[in-house]
Amino acid sequence: MNRVFGKKKAAAPAPSLDDASDGLGKRGEHMDSKIGALEKELKVYKDKMKATKSPAVKKNLQKRAMDVLKRKRMYEQQRDQMMSQQFNIEQASFGIESAKASVQTVAAMSAASQELKRTVRKDLNIDQIEDVNDDMAELMDEFNQINEALASNYATPEDIDEADLEAELEMLDDELEAIEETDSAVAEARPSYLQDPQLPAQPHTLPGNKHSTTVNGEQIPTTPY
Image (tube, rainbow, N blue to C red; front, side, top):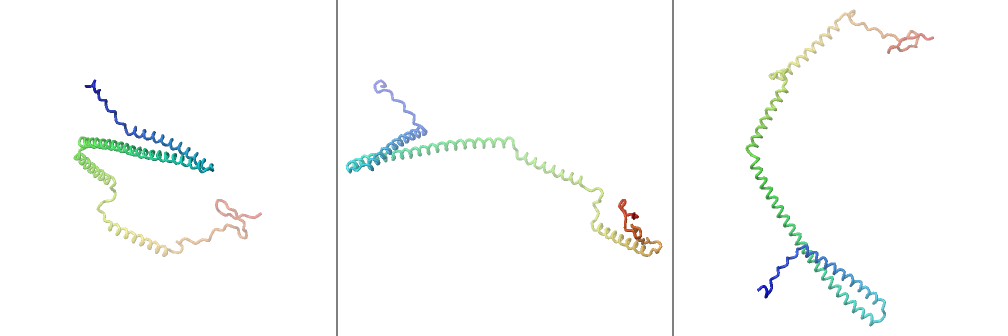
């Protein structure tokens, strides 16, 4: 049967989105070149219509220019359609790439979740963590007690009342005032011959001499020559 009808050909693989996009891009560039050539031709007809004075020639040039303009519009429409198709293909390609990236992200997150579960269940124990916290709290309490014991004042008894200290301080002030009053009274009652005499200040110049010199911070009278 294969000899009579021939063997069925294998189906050609479907083109990829990138291949389709590249093909449309090349066709669009070809259309752009055609549109550019038609624009140059249309400009030539416009220049000739401006320069000619014959109505018949001008009418013939207008007809040719209209044909060129129709082809230009047709190529522009085809180019716009291909650009739209290329945009749709690129959107589809972007969607596929995004979907693949999402699948990879989900797979990575799933693997990370499983790894985290295994790590938590194998290496971490909530009871052990609570025991560690309790031990740390107990050690901190003991450390604070040690600091308080080291910072205690050995010279001051702990059973001293501050009110008693203030009362004793007031009594001491009264005693000091009484002593000061007694000393003042004794000084006033001392005989005149036992009191310190009030001597005049030491003179620094000779009588009738206004000249003096300073030696070691003291003024000594001098005799003028």
